[in-house]
Amino acid sequence: MAQSQTVPSGQSVALSEVLEDVVGGEDWLRFRFVAPQIARDGGTVTSEMAEADFVHLCDSFARPYLLQYGLAPDVVVISFMDRQVAFGASDPDVTQFFEAFRIIEDACLLDVF
Image 1 (cartoon, one colour):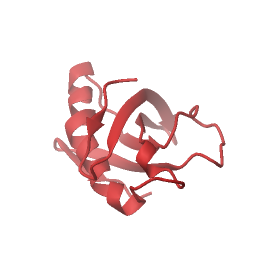
Image 2 (tube, one colour; image 1 turned 90 degrees about the vertical axis):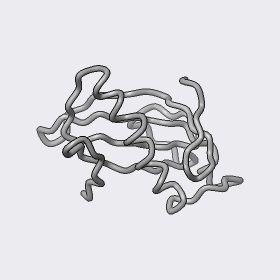
Image 3 (spheres, rainbow, N blue to C red; image 1 turned 90 degrees about the horizontal axis):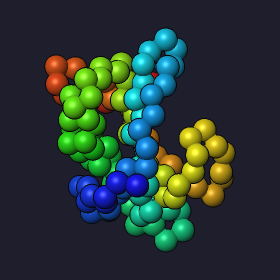
Image 4 (cartoon, rainbow, N blue to C red; image 1 turned 135 degrees about the vertical axis):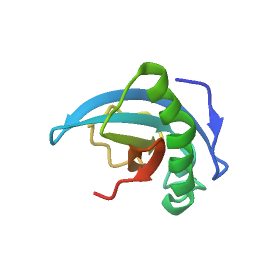
């Protein structure tokens, strides 16, 4: 995992992986972060508190990543999991939050789907 970084909610998150995917004919790029503080038992960060974290990571992490690697996905997804779980795996004990964005004119815009 990448070095941890602190986000606006005050929690520390670490990049787990970046995945490319095609959903409904659109290119998606998923940034998956481990965020232990979202855990149902003992966590201190709610989904509402994490909203600013998603925007922050899209602007400060995902956008520079896209520029660095010359990528232009249709959708960028930022996701949090309280502990590592394989993408697509079902584990009812793992808490996960996510938000999707479209990059329009060099800005992250929340994509309501």
